[in-house]
Length: 255
Ligand SMILES: [Zn+2]
Image (tube, rainbow, N blue to C red):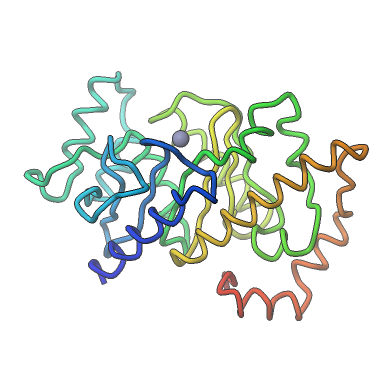
C-alpha cells in the first residue's frame, strides 16, 4: 500500500503542476498522502511539483506531528528542528515542508487519504481580492456542488506553520458540526487552495472544478455579480439520487 500511495502521489503532484492547470510554478504547493496506519508522505521542502520524484517526499509519523500542534508554542528554529524529528527514517533525505502540520490535520479526517495544496491563479485572483470571503459564500452551478461539495472551508490569512494548522483545526470542527462531513475544498485568504480527497484522482478533479468555478465567478462580476443558487437548491442538488449517482460514477462520493 505504501508504494502505491507514493506512486499515486507523485503522479498527482506532476498533474497539478501541468502548465494548463495554472496552479503552481517553481516550488509552490505541496501534496501529501496516507502511507499506512500512522504515517503519511509529504513533500520535502524545496522540491518542484512539476518534476518531483518519489525521493521528493518524506515519510512522517502522524502522532508525532499532531503532538507538535497540541504542545507548547515553538519559534521558527524550534519548529524546523521538530519537523526533522517527526521523520519515520531520521537518515532519509529531505526536510518535511512547514505545511506538514496542516497536512496532518487534513489527513486525520475520516475518508481523506490525499491532499493537494496549490496556488491556482484563478482562485487566488479572488482570494487575494476585496471580494474575499463574500465571493465564495455561495454555489453557482450543480457540477460545482457535485464535485466540490456544499461549501468551501474559508480561512482568513494566518501565519503558516503551527498557527495556520491550529486555526484550520478549529474551523474543521465547526464545519463538521455544521455540515456533518469533511470539506472537499479549503480556500485560504491571500494564499491559496487545498483539495481533500479519498483518491489522488479526486484531488485532481476537485482542483480542476474549483478552478473552473473561480473563472465563472470572475465572469459573473462582468454581468452584475454572482447569482448564487438558493440554499434549498444547493441542499437538493447535494442529496438528489441522480447527483449522488453522478458522484459515485465520478468517484467523488464520500459515504
Ligand atoms: Zn501555499
